[in-house]
Length: 419
Ligand code: GUN
Ligand code: FE
Image (cartoon, rainbow, N blue to C red):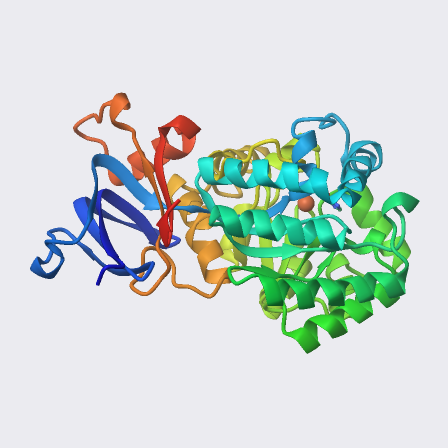
């Protein structure tokens, strides 16, 4: 049992959207990188195991960032006075074009991976650029840093600058090479099929990516219904479709392993289609406000039982900390509630914690919370300086953590092992 260790502290985790569990001064036993049990008192069998003692600190789940663009890290906080389509054309495509240089990519991606760990993100679902070799460098950087999840080489063969526009044939051939190499070289970071969004992908490219997804049994990520001009453009580009979601569904790209970012403008019918197909929504509230896209109907999506996860969407979002993105999800649901005169409700801080942690875990095939058998992904937040008022509830402690935690307060990060 040399691969066993014990983590000690005030444990709070989110086994369900509407429930947290609090084990004050408790213990998590970790064996082989997985949760073996959670205890209020340490069982005798673990008495002599290495103890990682964080007494008095908050031990909670590490964060899942389920939608972000790695090659946009160098433009964090830039150009966010522009709406989506202008922002893409003015800043984003030019920034991504630089990633044909693998050495440059390696430098940026090593820095990004280190930053992700420092803010407590241990699992991701990430867009790279169109460049296969730089995408493999990104996977290497993440795996070396201890981060796991999915990374996609982006596909686009229309409506983007020539410097990053792919020929359809080459886009498919490079995607096949990317998948082969990625599956061969990496264990914990896996490939995902990544058509950028309908405006940048021809029907032929989408159809062939749908075939590839089916043949390879890989998941799919894209964008959907983010911005009003984008939504109108998609219907012009695809006269055979009467809703954005159909542009993916008709090409075999919309099912239980599909994750679409945003869905700000998904109406009742589109949300029903998402639920029916079992697709996942990556809600990105910081990005949606920055790019003036809108405020997604998060409370409705949750009440309608859609699968929702959270994403930073950097560099549309300017915040890499998923604790802050979770706080933003709470705030933006409030804005929507205000704008609808209270017709649409808010979400709680503990629901936001679930969305930023457990919901992503479920996408990756695990149980929510610190369930026995899950990989142990945790952060230790030293919140002692704030002093606990005697009446502070576990949900208040979580709310405070989402709203106030800074990188320096994150004392330790675990992804199977201590990173
Ligand atoms: N839609 C297509 N590409 C992008 C992107 O890079 N960021 C965001 N936020 N939306 C997109
Ligand atoms: Fe995005």
